[in-house]
Amino acid sequence: MGKHYEQLTAEERAAIMMMKLNNCSARQISLMLRRAPSTITRELARFAAWPDRHAQTANAPSVYDARLAGLRARRERFKCRKRSKLTTDTVLFGVIQHFLTQGWSPSQIAGTLKLMWPDEPQRTVSHETIYNCIYAMPKGELRKDLIACLRRAKAKRMPRSRGEDRRGQMPDLLSIHVRPPQANDRAFPGHWEGDLIKGAANRSAVGVLVERSSRLVMLIKLADATAASALEGFTAKLRGVAEPMRQTLTYDQGKEMARHAELTANTGVMVYFCDPHSPWQRGSCENTNGLIRQYLPKGTDLSAHSQEQLDAIADLLNNRPRAVHGFYPPISVYQAMLDKLNQPNSSIQ
Image (cartoon, rainbow, N blue to C red; front, side):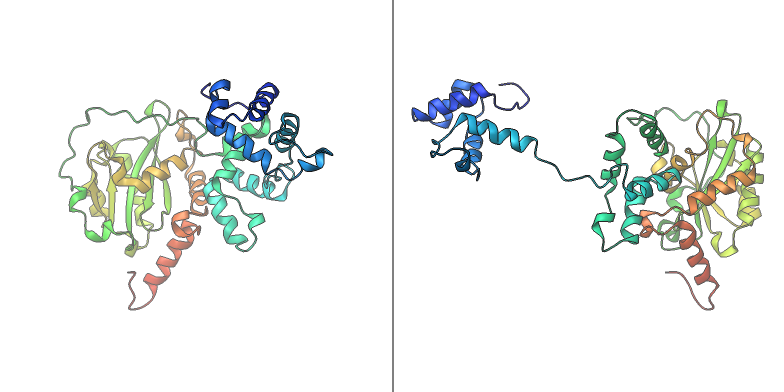
């Protein structure tokens, strides 16, 4: 017996028929054919339960008939399968293709389809079905274009390298472990996570801010990755945020945030720092960085993008449906928080 199952051959079925006529057991047949006993018992049971076997011959067949058993197997193998929901000529495929070109993930698309047509299962698919549809396509431009729309086009994830932190210690940093409890609970708005994404040869950079409750993202054009540029860029962007939504900022221990005390003085936002090599402590920002890289790929010159272009990218991300919000976009959740904060004598719990 090989490692992989193979269909019974005509010769094996003939041997099964002859041995059954001699009253051999399924285990004896399996030993002779070097097959698993379950393969033999399954073949006999399928033939015995086949409703068309009596119609194939004028005489009642024997306990097992090799010719008819082969006919049954061929019919079952080539029986028409259920038509796929996502063939390229369907309207549903066109809808999904449109959302993919907008940068939506299969999970976001699947969740949105269920919101659009909650009582029409023929118009909804799972995210796995979308992935399978894309990767099962024959090689060609359509398959290539759809894979390029996915967040990660690579077949495998590359492991993050680990090593000693050679960046030195931040002056007077506040650890994430002393962050207020409200910042840990995403039910309270106004707590942000920040990061810097860099371009080719680390010569250009874009600042990233993500609001922890709504997942709203803001992008900041920076002249370079120095502490002075980061202070100027983050100060300007945070000052544009409504004051009740400026509570805390959680950042990694990158040297660009060396002037965090001045940022706090300029904006009133307290800055807290993650432990070294602990990206999960800023999970929302790390996830958002992956989304941003669809528009700002690694190895490119990020200085070519104006602040207006970065704002347009942020708008695309903020209008995407998010599973964590029941597939409502971050901009809607953020606006609802602002509206509630503007109501007299109200607080967000």
